[in-house]
Structures are given as structure tokens and as C-alpha cells.
Image (cartoon, rainbow, N blue to C red; front, top):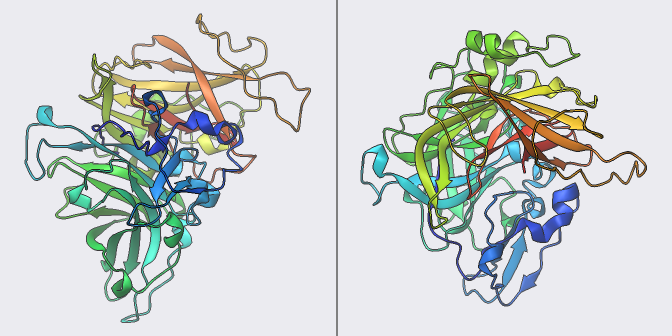
Length: 457
């Protein structure tokens, strides 16, 4: 949630194109081992990473402050993240929205894109906190790793310096609102962000404010996904962080916070969702059970909202005034995806105005469907030829499978697009959340599709 743009990636090549890690994109199970070099590679502009694929992107990171050694790092190399590194819906990456000068409050039309910043949620956010003893010693728990791809500037509102930072969270045990947070930049590789620590020992860290969001009525802690999101404070014109904290959702900011309204408070109600939601075929309660419908519009971690981007005539990302909200189908985690030629509803995208991107969206709420085929069974009406998935080594004789998406606008016009499906080796996806996929060209989305994640190719 929130948005971003700005500086071109420098000649040092801080990001290596995901195309160079094709084995990751295909299987996402065996990331390359990090390699230490004495010189950061210089990449041609064509290899600049435009698509923030957080699991497979290689980040060139200085190992020491003198810059004499560099390491290539992926999320799957980070002990705090490893198991869920290849689940993009759990993490977030986007260009921040910034005013022309820090601290300057300006009309929305004067806001622009700033640094590209990724945040990875720690594996198992819901179980990383025990019950603190009253007046007992606090232990700072690492809950996320952040990487600022802009190597020339700090995002001051959150004290995010260039390179990697570790976000710690703890509860002091003295009162119900006793949550505390600290962001700690580090020069070494993210291996250092893995263990609980005494808050007083976090050298060089900056304290952040934490607000715990009450659990919506009728929901339980099981309805809070173990994810993290960038969010946007429109009044303060600042990005902030949302993530699960114990049995709640927490919002972490660098100062006074005027939090964004939930999708529910912004007018997307369960009743309107139920009217627009087609059932997922062949499952009980195909529209979603009451808690499933309620949680996807009241708990921010399930959905994602941000200002959308386009490119200008020079190819630079440009911030638009169009706000987009992508919401998963309430029953998405129970969708079978086991039938060829069957269109399965997976998400809803609400935009505040017509969006003329690579994936055009009409104002209002569009419905998103997915379909797999082996021989044209989806009957997608387009001249585009989609590439099939790579063969499954476990079933070498199976026919090649192609995936499509169908977007049905509020006025019932239909558009078809090719889908890139990223497998996870059969790993279950515990929370079927939806998220925008930052791309320097324009906005795309991530949604669960069986034991994989899907985005427009």
C-alpha cells in the first residue's frame, strides 16, 4: 500500500535482472549461493531490474563499510525469510511517494516517485512473539528486512538508509499499547538480522512508533495474515509499514500517524462484495464464508492499495492520481485449480479512474479470473500467443499447460492477458493474499493460483 519512483539504477548495478536467475523464476526452490567479489558488477542499462521480483532478484550489497567486498544476495539467502522468500504476496516492493522536498506538504498533484524500497516479512510473524512477563525484560524480535535500492539517499520519515535494514518489534509488557519498534541499518549481509536482541544493544538504530489495530469484530487472530505492506499516510504524506504483530495488525511509522482507511471504511463493504463476487466452482461456500468475506476488506494485509504508475515519453515512471485496490477472492485459498478450461474468480481490482496501462483497467471494480488450458480450452479471445509453463520433471509426458487471465470491467467489457505462473515446488501458501506487483512499466498484481503465484506476463 502506498507508492514510489525516482532515481535510475546506477552504473554500479545494484540490482541484477531476474532474467539472470532463470532457475529461480522456474522453480523458486534453489536460489544461487551468495558470492563475494571485490568489484561490484557494472551492468548495461538493459539489465536494470524493472520488475521487483523479490525472491529472485540479486542484490549487490557491500560487505564492509570500505566497499572492498560485495555480496550477491537473494531473499532466499536470508535466514529470517528463507522459507517464504518465493511467496511475493507476503512481502511488498514499490517506489515511495515523496514531496519535492522532505517535510514539505504539497498538493497531491505535486507528489512524485522516490526510492524503490522492498520489505520482506519474517517467516512465521504470528508466532514470533510470546506473552511478555509484566515488567520483565523486553526482547527485540526481527520481523522484517528492508532494502532501499537508492544508494544515494535515506528515506527520512522511516529512517531507511541505502542498502539493508532490519526492523525489530517488541512489547514492553507493561501496558496493552506497549509495542515498540526500531529500524537498524547494517552493512554486512542480511544474515545479521535473524535473532532476538536486547533493545539497548541495537547500535545505530532509530526508534519508530507502533500502533496496534484492534481485531475487527467477528474475526480471530487466524484471520490476520502473516504479511507486511507499505502503506500511505495521506495527511502526513508519508509511507509507513503495516504487518502482523502477535495476534493483531500493527502500523509502524516515523512520527504522528493518520492511518489510511481500510477498504471497508473506504466504502468496499462485504454486502457489495457479496453482490459482485462470483462463486469459485466446485467448493462449499464458493462465495466465501462470512469471516472470509469480512476479513479481505477490513484487514489490510489481505489486500493492497497504492497510487498507480505509468511511464512518460522518456520511459521514466510517473505517479498518477489513480488509486488502485486489489482484493483477493474471499475463498481463494480453497480454489482447486484442477480443471482444464475452467475460469476461476481470483481477485477484484477497484480503481478510482480509467487506468491506461499495459493491463488497462476501467473505473470501478473489475473481476479477475484465471484459467489453465492444454489445447485452447479457455477460449481466450486474443491474438496474443502465451508461452506454456516449463515441463514438470515429475510428469514429463504431461501436455504443456498455458495460463490466462480474464478481466471483466464494471461495464462487463472483457480483456484477456497471458499469465506468468511461478511455482513453489508444491509448497502450500498459508494466506491467499493479493498484492500489487511493482513494475517500472505499469502496475500488475500477484494472486495465488493453486500452489503457485500468478501475475500478468
